[in-house]
Image 1 (spheres, rainbow, N blue to C red):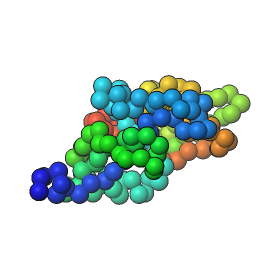
Image 2: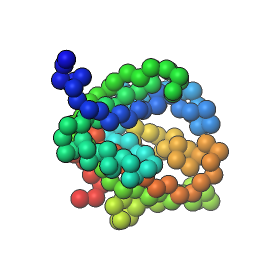
Image 3: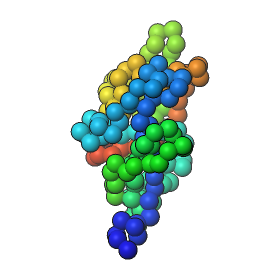
Image 4: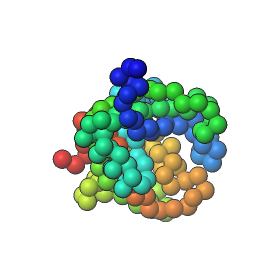
Length: 158
């Protein structure tokens, strides 16, 4: 049995293509390429409590983060591993979208963060795709609360 087989894993999957209701539906997200090139340095997810618990298990040892991508359609195809990490960072994020001005305000770890476009860039998304990912797709929601899962040592709030 190899070391990789013995490690307990926390799995996070990245979309290979944009979802059906997204403005870039069917196009490649290029998340894998952006991650491998160091341009995607984090992912943003809902369910802060679950993810922070899992990340603490990784950082306390005995678990690794397995970053994967669907080979084709989510939940209908196999996953391929892109990267494994034994240290992961995280920050709490709240984003509020104003549909009239098309602006997003972000609060990270309780403090306002003004350069939301940088968050989109670090997530591996163009601004339009980022906005639609969190506040479009027919959802018409204006509030997102979740977690930034960092793949590097970078943090927005120190």
